[in-house]
Image 1 (cartoon, rainbow, N blue to C red):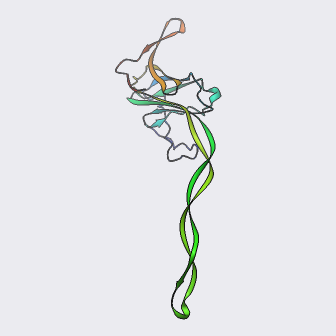
Image 2 (cartoon, rainbow, N blue to C red):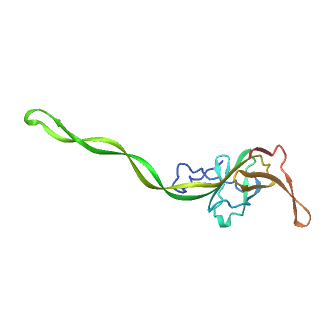
Length: 200
């Protein structure tokens, strides 16, 4: 599987997964339509992610105002890969919290040396003090993750749909897309050998 340079997002360079690079049109591949549907908006901010194995499928910036649906078309290799779908609705709150901090404070004097070379200096001690500080924290309003094990076949067409219904309620499904009459198409669930649900 080919790689791109790590994504630089929110300053988390080391934590960001590498991007999934689809096969070229000349390589063996299947066509896949990905649908991400958020049936409920659980918070003011949204972070969602689709991972193919260890690689992230680029979906563009997340926006709560436009989060109800997202469709992407991508070529995928005919290889068995776990697909992971993650949704995180959240908001940030700034609160006054109590913290305990260590500080050095003068606590007397100390004498070093002897005779004319003796010197007196300030002695410092460590103490723990209680202070009030403003802290901004991330509060989760809704979160869910669903997994699929997908084994696409070359030259086939698939539809993979992820539905988020609310906190802890989501699912991922796979369908094979077949041509029909008059330019229409039909969808049938992926065969057992193509799809294995890991968890929701």
